[in-house]
Length: 83
Image (cartoon, rainbow, N blue to C red; front, top):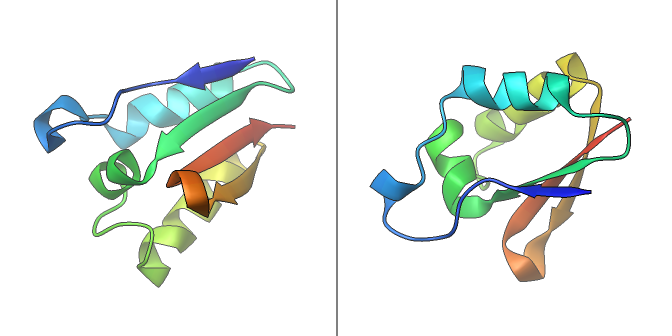
């Protein structure tokens, strides 16, 4: 099962507080996938997917929530897959 949080659009339409993302990930059953488009990633982990610090922050959150990370570059999104 795939969870899509937000459609792409203006940044104000893609607001997702980090604590809400963490809550989603912690509550997901094993095997579920949370799609994180690059623009939403930048909102949650500024300045975005190209920044090493932002990627490390995502990695830490994923580990805390027992999720694996899969980057789908050609679709400009990241999948967080619950273990």
